[in-house]
Amino acid sequence: MKMNFAGRELDLSFCHVMGILNVTPDSFSDGGQFNSVEAGLRRARQMVADGATFIDVGGESTRPGAAQVSTQEELDRVCPVVEAIARELEVVISVDTSNPMVMAETVRLGAGLINDVRALQRDGAPEVVADAGVPVCIMHIQGEPETMQDSPRYRNVRRDVSSFLTERMRVAEGAGVLPENIILDPGFGFGKSVEHNLQLLASLEQMHLLGHPLLIGVSRKSMLGAITGREVNERLPASLAAATISAMKGASILRVHDVRETVDAVKVVTAVREAV
Ligand code: 8Y4
Image 1 (cartoon, rainbow, N blue to C red):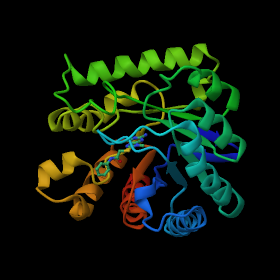
Image 2 (cartoon, rainbow, N blue to C red; image 1 turned 120 degrees about the vertical axis):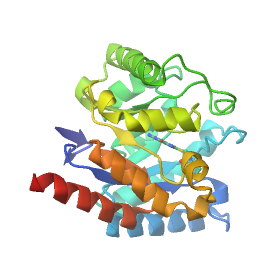
Image 3 (cartoon, protein in one colour; image 1 turned 135 degrees about the horizontal axis):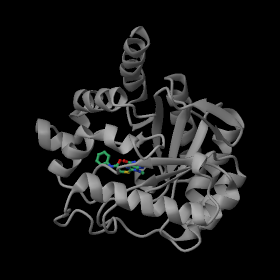
Image 4 (cartoon, rainbow, N blue to C red; image 1 turned 30 degrees about the vertical axis):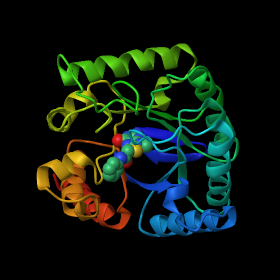
């Protein structure tokens, strides 16, 4: 299954690595526009050298309790970095945003994938994505980022996540998004207990039955902290185990902090798959 990301064609029957690039003010301590664009570009260059085929640029923190960011602020953070990466690097730029204006503007600047953790629930988002003509990742979330971790509940987490994604696909396709441009994501950590996350990871194959490529984000997440007892900066081995499991279960894109290490893990999974 090939997918076209604003001119770059990728075979999603192989597993790819997406590097995370946060462009929130707290991610680069020195402040200043020029410095943060330079710092973001340097980090993007390193991730591409390490084997990333996607860079996910995000200007809004979805941490519970994080401050809301205005459209102008988000545009000011994200656009210069998207523009700089598009000019210099051969990589698919993914933009982590729920804001339709940010979606439209970043695609104009060269972004090839919209990654919306709110599954196109903001007014106008499905239409903007349809108009932009680029692929979109539709992620499951229960509730709003601010409150999603306050005792999440499901009747059956696998079934509920699948139903939500099916309904959001229906809305997206109704607005004109092409089915062949839809990537799905169970949304690890987005309104889920550790047990919910584990049940979803255990049954990724089931999500494949929805018929779309899967994007998985588990890197350094708190479920890995709960399992190992490690702080966030000590979760690389656990993250690689989770990435390996995801790749073996057929994930197409892994969203990670540690690109170099994850690319090696994916190479092993791919080599074993080819040997069969
Ligand atoms: C430690 C490390 C603690 C990471 C928390 C986190 C996903 C995503 C995020 C995901 C898709 C995060 C933007 C949350 N997660 N997009 N975005 N899938 N598609 N938290 O799982 O990384 S941000």
